[in-house]
Image (cartoon, rainbow, N blue to C red; front, top):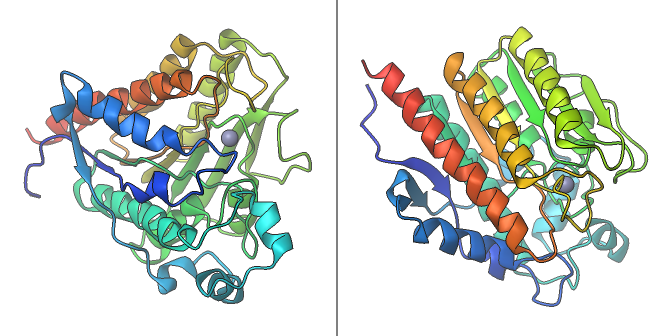
Length: 315
Ligand SMILES: [Zn+2]
């Protein structure tokens, strides 16, 4: 039996905020604001905050073109490649940030492989990163890399990627398109980026301005698809940019609706004893406090579910 761990592990590093240029349009303060919020909760001991190591080059190339990986690591991406990623003004700090972010995802994966239950990375869900280029704030694809590590290194046979961010997981879909053991499910708004959609194993599309009811109906569909696959692991991209207050997402989801989504996902994980990794995903509300609220709800629900999950297994 693994040693008993108090609290759900969440990997976090200050570089998640500080590694992005302060003038970038990306709301980098969301990471530091969220960690401060989680630490200020009365029951903050339900979380165990851990600092990630840097991912290694060999971990990155499991899902990416070595030429692209080396160009990024050596600061040699072209202006065009940088523009497509969009985390501008570019700063060399993005290199250690990206490695820590990938390291946090891999550490959370390794944790649930070893211990079961639920663990999370307080960043990432970088689903727009493709095999040989980055896009839409994403440099390397943590979901695809973790899926491939689970299949190839940990010898899992079935990994489900459940992507409930408002944007399609296009990079994940293309990197994993010929990988039988990886099931990609993306629920997204059809009118949001990327405008040329990739083909996931399952794409569930919502029209702009869809309500909680329409959203949760599709969430239930996505969960049914995941369960039928009988996955040994779920990688949950839990972006909250479907909120009505989000500046980028075009859906009309309330904080309560987003909370209900998380509840449905975590209930599935507990009921079927499926180890689950939470990837934070997008969230760009104005003001950003709405995004922080929804992410606080997410990690709180994850920790509560993890408690039930681990208790049901230790008897
Ligand atoms: Zn998104």
